[in-house]
Length: 345
Image (cartoon, rainbow, N blue to C red; front, top):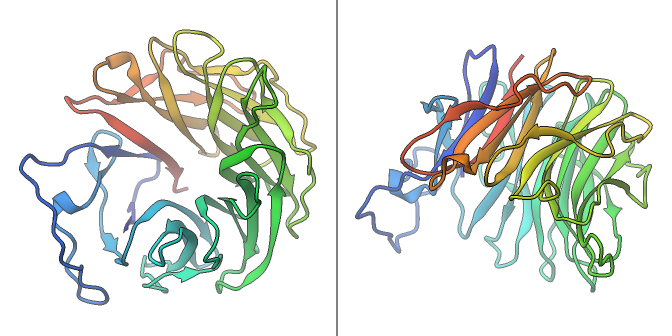
């Protein structure tokens, strides 16, 4: 796992994973060195190279090694540092690990700490948000005998787990949760797949969670439930309401990026969806952040087939899309994907 600090950028930052493994690279069976003084892995050993906007390399990377796979990291800035969470199968079952960073970027828990230890069940695809007092970490969890559910945990800045609780145990399969804080409550959104919903088996649902961990919408809020496939939500907040984006096949011709404002009381202001990124072929895997004046939504875009490019659009708090044709951020002779958008203040 590589953690990088983005220094001195008073702007929204888009981090892009670029498929750029050099030809002729070979694997190795040797175990990596772990701990202080460990050399970073060779470039071919990292599955992606991280870039910002026009392929600007991320500065000051920090490497943390462990056996097995460490995947799907997420980070939230808190008081005097940040919390990083990821899915980790070093113990031959995938659980959620976390580590703290201080304000200088120093890793305070270099081996990571497993706060969902369960040798029988899978936990994956975590996300994390900060409410000014605690972090809320959410993840998908198959402890149910039927399918995946969404669980959450409140964690203090010192790393102590305050509580763990189910966010959604609806019928079928729930996965890929995302979370944001609006100043008074969290909103968790996720993929929901239920074969019993024949008209719309894969949808996007959400639930509000109070700062003490109480789930305010135990039955979920339907965000996108048309007859096509909806998936891969992302969420941010302008401080008073939320904006959820997702990929949606409902317009025909592939996936497009749609969005909806969710008020603090759970009301969906845009039940038909706001057209954020609509173009030929697929627009997928959106990410979103609020800058203090507008949202920036970034996504992987197939209009430049055969290689995906990175496009983005600014959206106001009243859901006006400022860049309906999209802003082209990264186009190369290789595909770009795995977009993450963040604001540094």
